[in-house]
Image 1 (cartoon, rainbow, N blue to C red):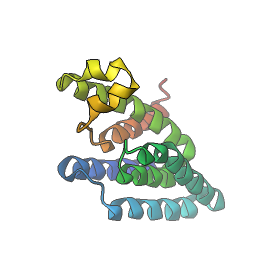
Image 2 (image 1 turned 60 degrees about the vertical axis):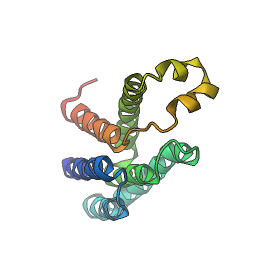
Image 3 (image 1 turned 180 degrees about the vertical axis):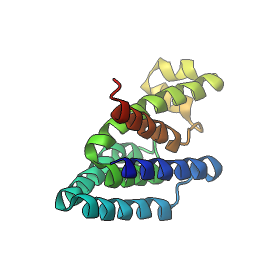
Image 4 (image 1 turned 120 degrees about the vertical axis):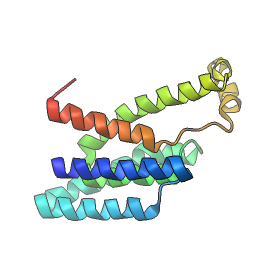
Length: 159
């Protein structure tokens, strides 16, 4: 499994680079990673590996698609999470997503504080949309942090 984790980290690093530089994650990266995830898991584990990849892709879609529909996240981020699900499976992806969501929340708060809009955001949901208008973070960064934390957690058995 360390091979798929290493590939997931490499994919995330490229995604972070392009997301920071261009504010997009290329389809070539996400689709390639998705195909490699299915092929590798099918080759290494067989039918159960393919099933795990499929469930990982579906979980990645279910976790971020609602935020995409509301305009809170980009399509590249959804496809990145789906590709990571194909590589690492649903169990890994779920925890990586949770850790990434925490990192994303901290990053979002930092952006609000930096732009002095945190009071507006805390005032209520109606005002929060106004407070965050025009502000965003490249979400590939929290996804990378989540994947990295989950790799370390599984490797060393922490928390």
